[in-house]
Length: 487
Image (cartoon, rainbow, N blue to C red):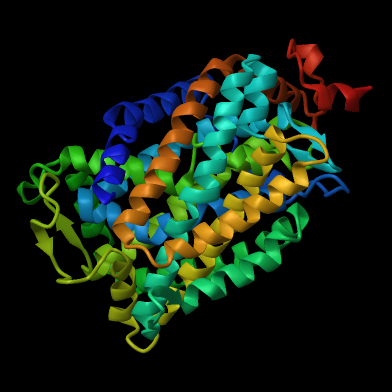
């Protein structure tokens, strides 16, 4: 079974998908005039503006919910995996795809706002909604919804819970018990117990929990990274040289890792920041805003937070302390560099922090990873539930939501008793399938996304600080929520 999973993952994550993600980011960066650079000031301003309503959440809560999905295992274990499989040069390619991906994140999140709907007193939206309303292809919208329910509801939660379990076991040596042949993981039961308290509370509770946890967890982690970077300040030039030289294969030590650096850097970059994957538009659609572009800019900024801040913090801690291995790309396990014999990827960051703070390094990373991964699991549930409500409309929706909750909790627990390699391969399949379907959709809808951007940009140039949005004025049809709002 593991061989089959790895084979499927390799087909989904071929160079075709990696190239498609990069080219899409380049296209939207050029067409929007590199908004990810020019409009940074607006991104920060909009992050803390706006108010919630009875039907929607604040822009900051939507940002936090999306960040809770973006900032997770990929920021700790994913970065370590990228370095292990692609060398330090993979870090550059993570930066590369984050910079380009922020433009893709803007487009998909703006589209999520344009075609959002009010369902059962709450805003709902995402790729399924904009595929149906914008492209008019119902079967394609249902296909994305099914893939998202399968991916976020069953495939992806296990990656996060597996990493939580592994990190806590490394730090505190928590045993797993066997009861009549059934594996009992104490950490797994704690995770699903806490998760149940939140997901049964609905979208508002998810937004409120994310708003509280995300700034705390990201701030503490980045602070630790800054301290370690400060303690190794003199190494910054040499580490940057190592990253850039490895990225472009200028050192014989990493000869043959060039292609792997690109592949793993982009692959783990997308897994971490989710730009183009189609997850963030669900959170973006839930926000109460005056113009779709406002939430698009906020979500573009969240890609920066995820990769340029949190992933970079992890990478620097690992590289400063030399706590990493580099596998030969063609034969996994044949090491070019092996600084940590017998240590899995989860342990790279723990070893890095522990080298500077032996007394609490392991436990700090384990606790940080718990919060990172737990909030990501919360976000995955929201994405899956949104697509359940898309497919199953009417009185029976609640029944299907309850079925999702039970299956979701089961998948989360299952991840804690599987091997890390299997959990990551399953997660990669989920991410890859969603990315394939969504990126094709946003490219087909690029005209709509660019109209939204031009409308916002033109109004801002006229001095309007908080522009209104009227889809009919700029030739966008089927944006029924905004049409009704303007009436």
